[in-house]
Image 1 (cartoon, one colour):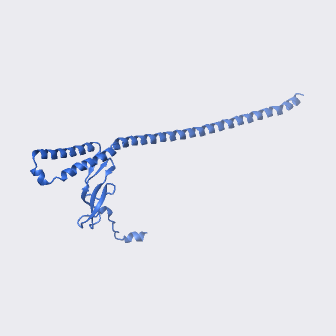
Image 2 (cartoon, helix red, strand yellow):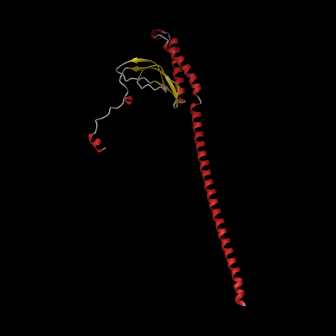
Image 3 (cartoon, helix red, strand yellow):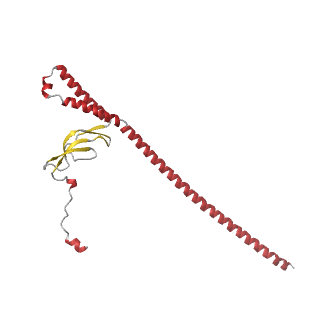
Length: 210
């Protein structure tokens, strides 16, 4: 009788054990999926954080560059207008004949000296604010800073060399305020940097190895 009862209870115990095992496996799978989901969310959050940090760094650099440009080039328009005033002062001085300057009375000479001092003071003030004068005579022609007005045949000077400055140019920082108006040499040898190197002798051993 007791053996029969034990046999009847055995299937129930086996079913309970299987159910417990299935429940444990289901819980393990759920935990695994939760861990995978959390890892994925962590990677996404890390990627967002890195992107945000990169965007903030780019913004910081752009802001710093904009501030630097604003400080460096804020007076560009004003300086460009002042160049016209400086040019007029120089033209006034150049228009005075040497004879008149030498024979002039003290008042006339004082006036000339005053105009000259004013021009030099203006250029010095512009230079203190980053404006530089361009006097490229003898330099290679640079279309970014020079404006060619005419060509001068000269076989003794490398081609594209500035041989005469008609009007000096000015720059502020790495920007040009006004290009220098120049005369450029032609007919001479090409600049060394522009010359195409001639091919060297053929290496017969290298061809054999190839």
